[in-house]
Image (tube, rainbow, N blue to C red; front, side):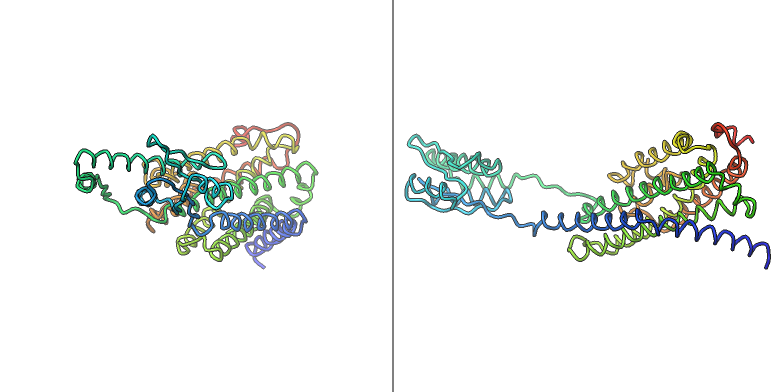
Length: 399
């Protein structure tokens, strides 16, 4: 067996140990099941609350000049896209009785002085009140104009002709709402995965170092074999989680009828998986280096704080790209690692990424991962066997 094959076998053994150590734990199994249940439950709840998009019409009782007023109320409600059904009452007492029995939501009673009163069990719905007030004002205006000999129909036609229309050069995207939601999901999934499992790598390195297990391991294998076996093993667990959550979310959303852009969702999911892998490799190698700088778990958070700051910056600076994916900021950051790992899934969800841009951005990120891996490997080999106080990043790089 060649030395290269031996190295692969050693990395595979470490990989297998790290992977099984994570997926066999009760916390991983329970956490995954709970997360899946939360995803499905949230989608079901959203589906129920969203309903079929058709609101129940408001029932209104009218007295006085009911036929003409009912027509104006109907026209006003249609213009405001609010369903309203009108029922005529013979008297004020009958209208009030309809409100008290719950047969109608409100009653509009005509007063002797020409004013009107809205009667309801509670404060009337603001939109319904606006419709009724607008209709009453419109009817009063029509009657006043008629008394002055003005043709109300001709006046309304002139007003309608003077309406301002809007013409947009770019066609509106009916899928924009779903794309924004997918952008948020991709961004949070990427951030949570990289931060959570990156910390697992750092904690694992520190734990092996503080318990002196690393000294036993490095007596039989090389530091880089241990490093890459650990990163790849925990990375496989992270990938398993992402794929599980993504598949469950897409399938559940499809079955519930919440997803109308299935092809886009699949492309966003595929892009997110790619960037999760690249983002994890970039940060996990550096997290491993951070874990090797300290000998106690209590010091690990401080050693990893620069990486946390960078991660938070990547997340925060990617949020504007959700609402303006073609802006200058997102166009520039799409080519700058590690920001590109967070911006590109958002741009993919928005549908503004070309295949050439995607390939180029991935290539630049791969180069950044190689550079980060070289630096992390150098730090890890120099510091993993050291004991005592925490070593700074600058000192570790200088050797």
